[in-house]
Each structure stands twice: as C-alpha cells, then as structure tokens.
Length: 321
Image 1 (cartoon, helix red, strand yellow):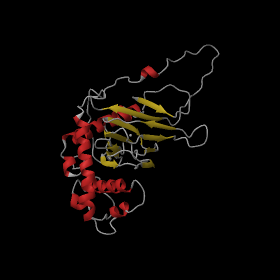
Image 2 (cartoon, one colour):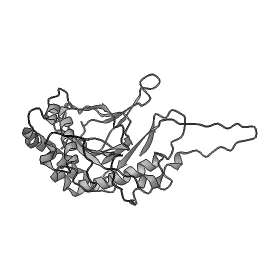
Image 3 (tube, rainbow, N blue to C red):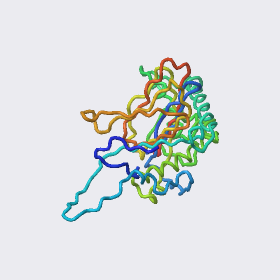
Image 4 (tube, helix red, strand yellow):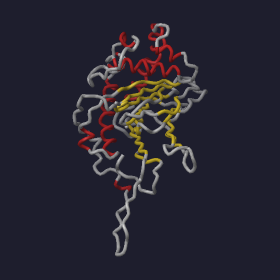
C-alpha cells in the first residue's frame, strides 16, 4: 500500500515515492524491526533483482491523463511541495506476502529473548556511571528501550562483539563492513534475520526510486544497515522523533498483539490550522513500513491491559534500518 500524506497541493498520487524502530511482543505484545539507510558507508551495494521489487510503471493508475491545451490557454508550473510518502509492505503470507508466518514469529521470539537477556545478563555487567546505565536511570516509560537501543548501537559498531560493546565509547564510532555481524550472536545467526536485512535492502532501493531518485543511482548507493530491537510493555511508548540525515526509516513488525501501540505520524507542515493533523497506522505482524527519515513518528502507548511485553526490532539505515 502506497500513500502520500499531507500534500500541499491538490495533485494526484505520483509514482515517485527511507527505516528505524518498531514495537514487538510475545503473545499479546508487539514485535517490530526497524532500519535506517546511512549515507556514510563506503561500501558499494551490489545491484539486485527481485520479482517482488519489479513494479514496472507502478502507481501510474493514480495519475490523470494530461489535458491538451487549447488555443489561447496559458501554461503554468505546478509544484506539489514536501509530500510524505509512506509505504506499507506485507512481508508474510498471512497478510498476502511471500514469506511464511513463521518468519515474523521466529524474529519476535528472538527479539523478546534478547530484550530479556539484556536486562538479566548485560545490565548487571555495566560499570556504575556507564552511559547505558545512565539511560536506564531516566524516569520515563521509554528508559529501558532507550538503553537497549544504545547497547545495540554499540554492538553494531563493534561488529557484534558483546565484550567490546560494554566498554565506554572513545572517539567517533566506526561504520562496520556490510558483511560484519550486526547484532547479538543468537539474532545474527537467525536465518530469518539475515533474510530480513536483504529484504530491507532491496525494498529500500525500490522506495528511493519511487521517491524520485534515478533507479541506477538507487541501485548503486553505498550505505550500511543498522538494526535494533525494542520491547514495549504495558503503559510504555516511544515519543515523537525523527532520523534526519538518513535516507529513510523502515520498521518491521514481528509481532503485534491486540493491545499493542500504533505507529503515529505527525504533520510535517506544522501545528497551525488547517494543518496539525496526524496519521495513525495500525500495524499487523509481518508489516514492513517505510517512510522518510524527516517525518516525525512515534509508537503510541501499549494498553495497560496488555499482560505481555511488546517487542520490536529497529534497523537503522545509514540504511538506519
């Protein structure tokens, strides 16, 4: 499903068309994976072809035929400024996609397991005053997931080396090789995890081409993918934020329970009338949502009635996946 939100002109949906974090869960929680495309990687990405990515002249059915000009008519240039293109891709076959439902189920299970292991095994090893421990000491509903995110970011920058990821940061972070380990060992060894990264890579390039980038340029971009998981329990949420500087954001929902939070997009035109609107996407397990990195978004509150945590995985593509 492709949608253009908050267009500033009365134009039809055009065929021009970037990734971060999502919710995740056990039985009644939400599990999601996010990705961001990073412009700083120096490694060339191979051009790939996929039957699911070849849409030909996709979305042209939304365009009106040009109206011929008659005698005495005057021409003008029409600009549709700053549209926000959001694409929702069903990945698993229970939603009409191509991967089995076990694809998102296995990712959800490992995301939740890793989230719990972080609390029980990683946090106790952190020195007093460690930057990740300081995140945990913040008094807000997203403190645990913020700390979990920062550990995964450090883990990514250390190519999956758990011991090094617990050391205090010194100097600028490194962008690892695209083939380096990108998560904790159990997640990195999961076939579904590696396949998801490839899916994100291909659909990200298609998304950029639909956004107006030349296809040759989109297919040849140099970038890296940073991914992370997030788990939201009852009453938790992730406040409004952006990922400015990345190509785009992508979120994969590995598991969504009936009480799980939703994905809310803020109006990029500001809050003064007639703007200030919002768009709510109700995710389903197996959804991949791709949107611009500059578009403000948040994970709304998971219902306090939810008896199980919701778990998600975020990928940064610098692709911040």
